[in-house]
Length: 73
Image (tube, rainbow, N blue to C red; front, side):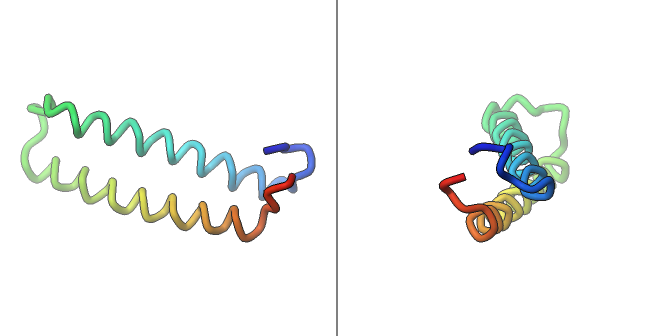
């Protein structure tokens, strides 16, 4: 995606989505390892719930990108 033709808020939107995708991936990898023994069950539950909300937020950002940023840019 070419940033030069995008408005500053569009660039921020794309960057935010990219950063969030990276955080989601890191959290999924952490949770899938199963070596999070230093975290109690409540903490693990909170991380799984956080992941659900992060993915929901990422989906909203994706929809906003599709709505406001033409794909040919």
